[in-house]
Length: 184
Image (cartoon, rainbow, N blue to C red; front, side, top):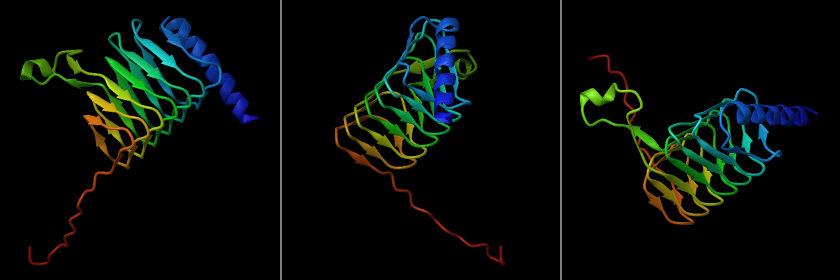
C-alpha cells in the first residue's frame, strides 16, 4: 500500500516541477521517489528521467546554468546522494549508486583570490557514465569523467578521468595507528 502512495506522491511532485520549474523536464510515470528528495532546476535546465528511476530519501538533484541531466532506465540512487549539474551529466541504463554518492560536473574557478567570491564563477566539463555501472557508498564523481559500461567502483572512490568498460576500481588507503605516550 505504501509503495502506491509513494508512487502517487512522486507523480504529483514531478508534474508540479514540470509546471513551475522547467518545460524541458521529461519523465515516465513508473519512477519511485522517496519523500525528502530535493529538486532544484533552473528555467533553462534540461532534465530527462528514464523508466523506473529510484531515488531514496534526502537525494538532492540540482541542475543550473542551462545544464543537461539525463538518467537512463532503471537507475537507482540510495539515500543522501547529491547530483549537481552545470554542464552535462549523462548516466546510462541500470546504474546503481550507493548511499552518499556525489556527482559534480563543475569546480569553482580558483584562478585568483578575486574570482573565488564571485557568484556563479565555475569551470565545468561533462560526466558520462555507461550502462550497468555500480558505485559503492560515498563515491565522488568529478567533472571530466567518462566511464565505460559495466564498471564497479569501491566505496569511497574519488573518480576523475577515463575508465574503460568492465573496469573494477578500488582506492586503498593505508591506516596509521599511533598511541598516546605518557612522556609527551
